[in-house]
Amino acid sequence: MAATMTPLCFLSFPPEIRNMIYRLLFICRLRIIPADRYKLGSQLLCPKRQVHNEGMSILYGDNTFQFDVENTWGPHGSAWVFYDEGLDQYGKFGGRTALPYLRRFQIHVRYTKDHRLEIIREHVRDVVKEIQALSLPSIDYLGLECDYGCYNEDDSIHWDDR
Image 1 (cartoon, helix red, strand yellow):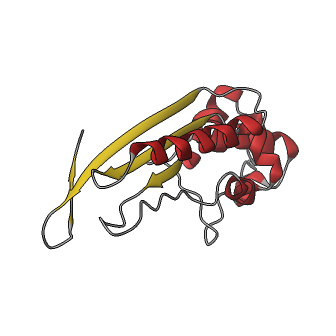
Image 2 (spheres, rainbow, N blue to C red):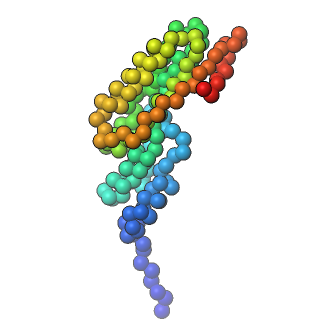
Image 3 (spheres, rainbow, N blue to C red):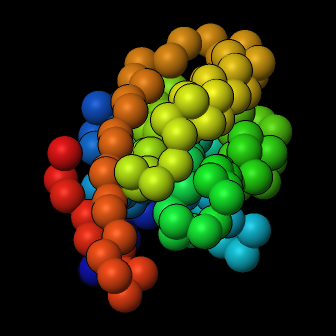
């Protein structure tokens, strides 16, 4: 008589093993930049509330989400500084339920010698204020990365890693 195998339930694994699986599935080594055309999430988070909560905490809590602030439109670009549409985009990733899980942010600044740094500083402050306005339970990481570029005579950008 053949032995029948009972199916193994995901929730029967210890939490440490489940977290290892979630990390393999959901952690992105690159920073995540919000965009309308992409939906961050997984069907794996849908079936059970416990799986959903455990996975959300890793998907949104262990990844780093990035804002871009830049004024690289050239010497005649009137110091246009912009950043992505802001934290509204993060809510679109996983709905408003994703916001309490967000804990890691990176502000990436690209600027040129042709524009005033006061404008860049003002927009970086705006991004930080947006993050603070979320009243998140905790912020584990808030990084600032700056790239300096300069234009040559043919208006192409050359970036230094400074």
